[in-house]
Image (cartoon, rainbow, N blue to C red; front, side):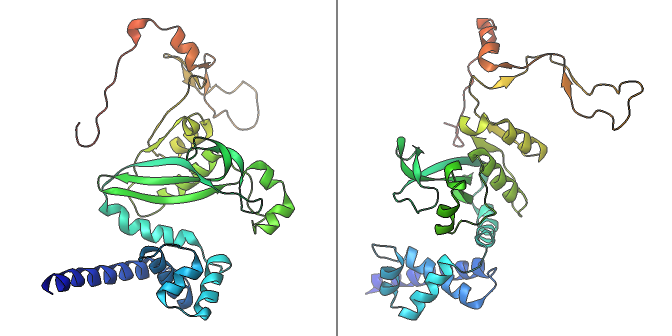
Length: 291
């Protein structure tokens, strides 16, 4: 009996804390009913039970058919901004996990059907091959005590963007235009950088490091980054001079402001091929535990 009581009290306290956290995050939603539906939905996701689709979830919680209609409308058609909840959650959790980096990457979600937004045969890291899936770009804060999503954005392939009828059936707004995965990632990073959290260096693989526009935007926004690049990426050799050219005598209009170089860029593969063997060195990395 004592063990049951001892076990029951922390469970009740945990539930109370979770409800308080969800209500605190959901407080940014504009309407009372939306905030109540958010709490019910999160309860259904985290409490015990198998299938997490809406109808069996609400059945387990003992909710009415009216709640089902209300929650379905909340999830599918209610005009609320999910970024409000993401930001509220991030600003509460990020300080607690000791963030050391932001990681930009994409994930494949296995899915079939012509009318699920973004589904097509494309490469999925989850599958390790080409298959029917959606792809979502994400930025996560990585820390000593956990990870935290800073945002997700669905990648919409070009053929989806060009198909007006398909877009209409999938309820994709006209304002959504085609963006590459690195472009989506840069938007997520820029958004998170404007929140009340500590910035951290952005890490990413070649798919993102090879994109010059992403690197340029991170630099312009004053965000540190460590991105992998492939041998095909263009670079300037050491000693290259960057300077703004002088105004041509007698010319009119604005003076030049863009930097120019005294040499042409070359690929990393070309640069490396011309180096001496003793120009290379091995760099050892350690994890945060010092191993």
